[in-house]
Amino acid sequence: MNIGIVCYPTFGGSGVVATELGKALALHGHHVHFITYSQPTRLDFFNENIFYHEVDISGYPLFKYPPYELALASKIVDVATYEKLDLVHVHYAIPHASAAFMAKKILETKNIILPVITTLHGTDITLVGKDESYEPVVTFSINASDGVTAVSESLKKDTYDHFAIKRDIEVIPNFIDLSRFKKHKKDHFKTAICPNNEKLIVHTSNFRKVKRVEDAVLVFDQVRRKVPSKLLLVGDGPERHHVENLCRKLDTCDDIRFLGKLDMVEEVLSVADLFIMPSEKESFGLAALEAMACEVPVISSNTGGIPELNVQGVTGFMSEVGDIEDMVRNTLEVLDDKNLPVFKKNALARAKEFEVSKIMPLYENYYHKVLEGQTQYTAV
Ligand code: GMT
Image (cartoon, rainbow, N blue to C red; front, top):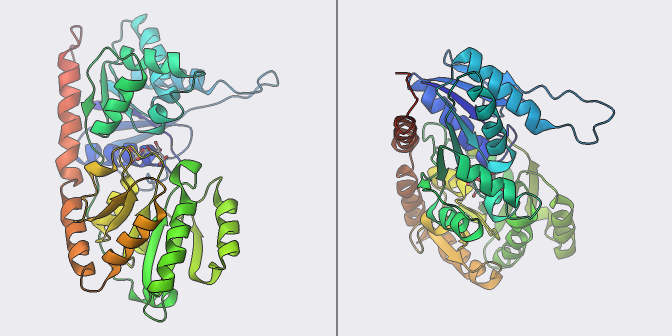
């Protein structure tokens, strides 16, 4: 198949999933055309089946906000026409689903059929999409898509709860490439960070409010009083300064390091003993899956789709959002030397259930199902 993929190319779960899916489809022989405003972060290699089309956003003094959605729709029209796309798969509804719908309608005037599949990832539904400045367009473009998937049962339910959706939504969970996300031997790194054999706790996120990074610091502050430990914070975003100030106030700076945005997050995860994800909302929790694949148990909130991944008392523990005391208790339980090896083993076993080779065919089958539903579809 010739598959167009539209996504945000920056660090962030939806872009990662879109890029990794494209890579897996390309390895399976499909021609995959990425349509984004810059090279996706994880698309830094050559594959004969992968193509990249940059969306040109021309500025003009009249535009306070350049109309990205129109530029994207025009690029989808161009790529679909000249690369003969069988479908376009957009990741994150805003504004990708409505841009794809516009492209589809333009293509119809040229007698070209372009089925649109939209994958809902999380904040496009639970946070941004619900906002009244976007809601009518999000509702319309979900209903107008030829296929819609969500990354968890919880996100599917949220979508039905918050929007007037009149169509089926297929749940296809996030996935992991275990050949990349595995425990790498990085003992020298562990020794540098934890010279006295302290336990190592890791948090990775885009440091948005919804991630509640302060809770990770508050939990750590209490844990380190009982168990010698260090905290690594990976990623960057709007809450970073606030979190830094909290570390100063708690006098934890010597035990916490901010690593910023890292490409090779699996190297850090390889030396971690525990991953902490205290999010306010989380439709799936891909970052937790990446940790589990590197044999790292997870302490998390029980919000959204996290319970579909983290198994209570087996791969880690979940607490109510903001329940610092419970997260501290659970962290100490996991870090206990007699428990830790079992949690680590369980985390890896659970991650294996989400291996890319198991999940990619679900997308492939869904593409076929959508294409078969297109009465005018003639391509083989
Ligand atoms: O907020 C983020 O974590 C980024 C966001 C995105 O769309 O880029 O992530 C969402 O999609 C990921 C991939 O499907 C999910 O694993 C994350 O749980 C989800 N984030 C939230 O729901 C907050």
